[in-house]
Image (tube, rainbow, N blue to C red; front, side):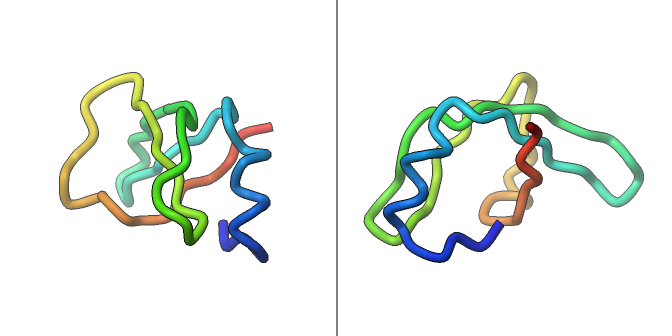
Length: 62
């Protein structure tokens, strides 16, 4: 999700997110903190997260 302003990132604290691999495997996580001043978010994942996926986009689950 591209945030219009970094200030809006604070509204996503506690939101559930999902990262999907190309083969359909999904890993769930939760936004736990802001990271830096440009709107990046820190996510704690429910299970192991592959390092090559760092910095990729995730979907926010309502």
